[in-house]
Length: 506
Image (cartoon, rainbow, N blue to C red):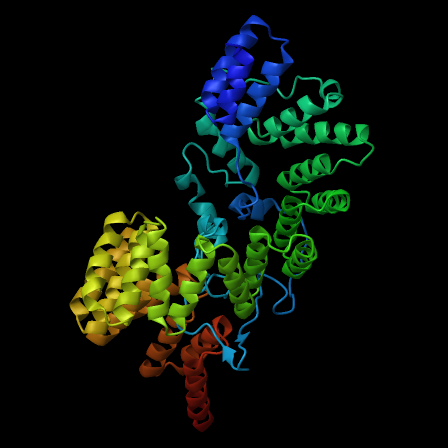
């Protein structure tokens, strides 16, 4: 059997490792065989291929070394760092985040763990993150950066390859390969996804773009990817826009919008999505991208409309179903949310988070017999931070049924599993307050404030303790801090009014 035909067959059937072995064997006999060289290059790229459209989280190193200037005081609703504080519904009423978990920027969570969820935990301060960088990474205290992450993602699969690196990107003649379009494209992807060398890939893309008289949209798109990995977002934007002029593809639009989101320009990203949707009206990726943009600036109603549109086009879309279920749950419709989560279970989604959500929906739907079984499954599947969240919810259920002892133990287990679980510290403070341990309660509230400065509950609880202790000055300060974190919090406003009356009489 012809070895080249066999290698191509292995590649088409996605048996990439076997394809690499056949190509390596034949390249040992004839190192200048371009057919096997091309096929091996493609197979190695397929093994290490990474969907970088989804990889858009800001690492600590990127935040420290980012020299791109963005607006420090943007208007509400125009920046991910300053989202709108409320969401207008069709009935003209204001939907606030009351009762919903929020991110560190103050917007409600979406119900679906996106790649940005792997960034620093909510409330993580820069000083604490720097102080623990060495503890998280063996042998070095250098913060994680985006380029380093790309390299580490390819490390495990490189071990499966034959001994040493297939291509030494720093020594090959870029101009020679740029004159061969087929080999050049394979080499460009290899440099980006296997060798993780965006600088050399940038040189290859530049030469190839010149040889095509700046008319090839594919090379412009790869140029944009190189600039993006190097942190040159303005140059990446120019290349993606130029690529769209030649050929408006969905991937180029997603890459362009990722650049806009990185530069904290969600409104420009929405414009790009809308323009591309005129040509790709039923693209699930574009509609999901638009919904994420609306989520980032707290336009919940717009995001939900798009999620419903996604479900109509693709009934098995996990992200859209999870986000719709999350919204129904926090709008006091746990029965409808339970339908969505059951649909996800039927589709094969089986993890601690979904069983935890099913348990909560069952409890608030008065299906108490199912609640305990679902929590047991969630705890059996939970790891790390997920286990702390499950125990936190178990504590809430215990409070609802009046078992304060179980609630106290559940919150204690949650903070023992995850020492940075601010919500559990806050609830422990409330339980300590009911026991009469004011100092212990104050300590728990302070820990919660330090871990998660974006939460308003610990600040409000500290204000109440100070008010009961007669320390009106501290109470005013903490109540104002609570309103800074959550301007629509009515209890903080009422407390400030009481304090104003008391202080006016003194």
